[in-house]
Image (cartoon, rainbow, N blue to C red; front, side, top):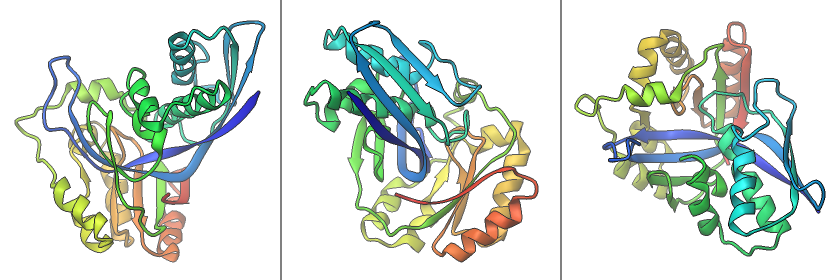
Amino acid sequence: MIVTEKAPAKLNLSLDTPMRYFDGFPQWDMVMVSADLADYVTVETHRRPATIKVYTNSGFLPNDQRNLAYQAAHILRSRFHRKDGVTIKIKKQIPVAAGLGGGSSDAAAVLRALNNIWRLGLSLAELAQIALTIDSDVPYCVYNKLAHVTGHGEKIELLPSQPHYWAVIAKQQISVSTPQILRQIDYEKIKHLNNTELIQNLKDQNWLEAVKYMGNVLEPLTMERYPEIGRLKDKMKNLGADVAQMSGTGPTVFAICHTESRAKRIQNSIRGFCRDVHIVTLL
């Protein structure tokens, strides 16, 4: 049986971390949304050979157990004692190592596909619990809907859908090490966000008020090493974005606009010095 799943990119409308757990990982307090920029993951099961194979159209991704999609297949196959082989083909469109959760979304797509193929009957909440053993973004990517995400990433509160706003997503030629950025967090210096107000305004469908509470507390850490991220963010804001900020630990910066014409203006203005630029709608 063959199933193809869409694996959308994620954006952090809000990213905060109140504390660090005893296991060394951050506690998250985030509002996340998915964008219509997606990989496509095709999963096929077979009796022989009983192996897991991953193929991608990107030369930058590993195709072994380091790949999160591989890990997703291995975890689900082991947990339910399946003997099938699994072949995973990933058509990459989300930029790699960009803070857009491409690898996590691919892994979530594999979980959903195998849940369907093997008729496991798992709910999205059950898949999300399994997903946390792969990476902290994978539980959210199981849902791919506007949500408040807390804990290690496993607590998902879905929020009401918003009107379809436009986003300009731009990744410069920079590589950011997520573990390195997370190790540098100084919890005494973080300026925390007011996610309570953000969430209430999103529930009230008050977008122009909600944008005032969006932000990413990791921006200062990443921008200290890569000041060009801050320059790109400022350019987007000066061109009229409702909000412009970094996603995840970077380096991708996104601008959200409530009109398509404003988004196209920003896209055209930054295309000259940033090659990897996409204009998308928020899901």
